[in-house]
Image (cartoon, rainbow, N blue to C red; front, side):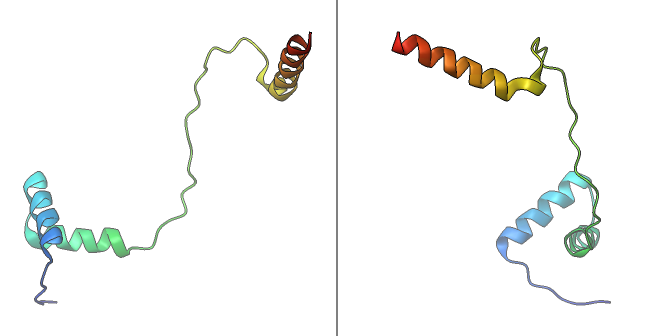
Length: 79
């Protein structure tokens, strides 16, 4: 389909930058932008990588440990 579009200055700047960055034509940049923006999103689950922080205490009992430390601090302030 052949059509005429009028770009606002911000859109024109973005298209020009993308054309320069990818050495692409106006037509291909605009087509790709429309496809990227309007295509249905796939539901890919979000995942993060985990890394060891080197903790030497069992973090599965972190809430209990925090409570004990709070109690100890409170007891020291009262003494």
